[in-house]
Image (cartoon, rainbow, N blue to C red; front, side):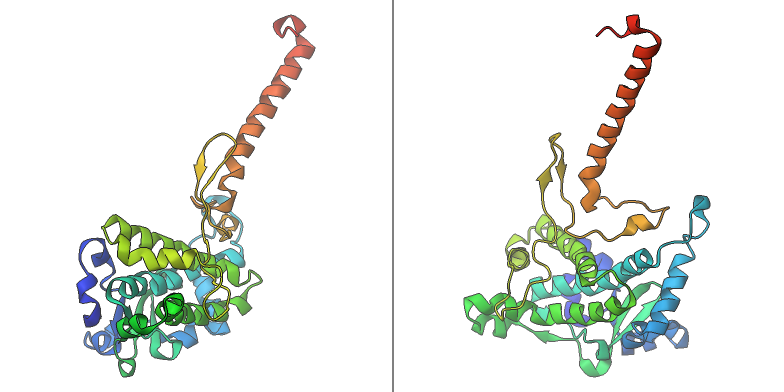
Amino acid sequence: MIDALSPLFAGPMVAYRDLITTSAQAQAGGESSLDRVVPARDVLSPGWLSACIAAHGMQYEGQSGAEAPDERALLSQWSKYLLSSMVSLPLAANLLLDHQLPLELRHLSLRLGEHGVVTQLILDDAAGQGVSLTADIAAAEEEARLQVRFQGYLAHLEAVIERLVPHTPLGPKVFWSNAAHYFVYIVGMLEEQGWVAQAAPARQLMATRVLADGRRNPLYQPVSEVMDRHGERHVPRKVCCVRYRIECLGYCSNCPLAIERPTARRAQARRVDQRANARGALTGSDLHPR
């Protein structure tokens, strides 16, 4: 556990207390506690990524006669474990404590768990436990405060995503969407706990298309609320994570296709009824009056 973050670990955030630790704390557990701890830059190298994806894919192979999982979908699924770790506790620290964790790749190691996925972030002791953003945010002009608060946070995510993109034709938007999924989740969790004012900067960030430095905001409007033509409410992601390409997993609950799928099912049911009616008209017109 990071001592500087201890005020966070009450209520639902207690589940995240061991998500991030320091090298010294990891080493205190003995040599066995360092098993499968690998520098982040190594894990995100082509060789390691290929090995992690292969290990992750083994759990899906042969399930219900499914074909070998699509590598693009496997990398997207694997990235969720890393990106959720980079988003969740660091975002809560940013919003509730005005604290920025030192998550630069050169200061970061990753613990790999079953199926090659990331289970813990380990900070280099030389980097310390992060810095307070309070003074910088207070000193910034109002229009620049979002940039000051989130520039380090976004830079850490960008560094990871830049390493993932060359490994797949998916493009960066898929990985930013994966990160945004957890961003939205944590913001909602904090608001449910009564921290609406503290979460407001994150809501403002998601409503901001262009940052103060003129750069496009990759977390702009990551989800939307829409009603389909049958009056059903949907909150889809902006970009599909292609999880459905892993046959045994199928679509996630906030897939952008969530609107089309219910509509498609209804349309298919209508077509089936129409065909049945047509067959009935041919075989017994008295049963199907015109």
